[in-house]
Image 1 (cartoon, protein in one colour):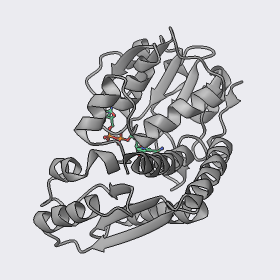
Image 2 (tube, helix red, strand yellow):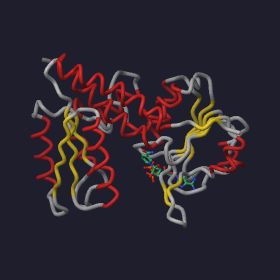
Image 3 (spheres, protein in one colour):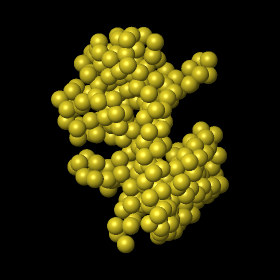
Image 4 (cartoon, protein in one colour):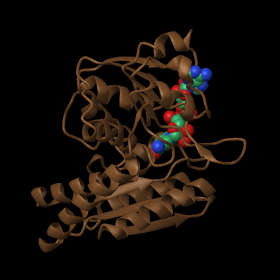
Length: 284
Ligand code: NAD
């Protein structure tokens, strides 16, 4: 049976390291500051935002929550972002998605200064990631790479199969695996005979958003299975995209849900904010 990759433990270890660096940075007169902008009243978003604030405080960083009403115009939101781009006390700007329908997400993301884009969603930073330059990496894919590293799972030469091609998870995680010399296959909703593809995987990443989507028949014996999904099953219980019980019998490594990839996402957000604060000193 599979080794269970404990994302909670890795996240705690990384957060401890970040907190130490934050404290030494404060000694140099800089406190990393993250601002989260929440527009409207999405219930799930509110939970995420509260967690981000809490984690900032735990690690000794400043956090600022800006709540704007549902009817905020696009121009108002863009003006707020510009103001924060120019605020030296702010090192990271995160606009919680999704936004209300009347606001263009692409425009919003492109307005955030690439120097403060701690989500790693700005096209400039995505381009830098693709070309293997130092940049803010998107938090969930980055967290996955850290989990692999912490468990001593080598990537070079492995066949990685990513199921899902969203801009925030599927595409960037495939790119990061490629950057580390994996052979990468992307699968998605139009893929024919998914199981035939996924059975080739030494490393299988599921980022689909459907409970129990990946079953034992999708998985090669001994594969590393990374479950990104955060779903609710019929019973209302939190679950991933992978049928954990049967797949963990067959896999070599597996991330559980919860306590797998989830805790890494917020941790890498803190890491990126810390890096941004450090770089702001170098620019002075
Ligand atoms: P998304 O809905 O944007 O993308 C889902 C992807 O799955 C699409 O690219 C689609 O092509 C693919 N897909 C859908 N049906 C398929 C099928 N039948 N066969 C093959 N592929 C199919 O979702 P997302 O934002 O990438 O998120 C995916 C999951 O990960 C969700 O459950 C989400 O909640 C979770 N998530 C978790 C974290 C975390 O921190 N752990 C972060 C982001 C998202």
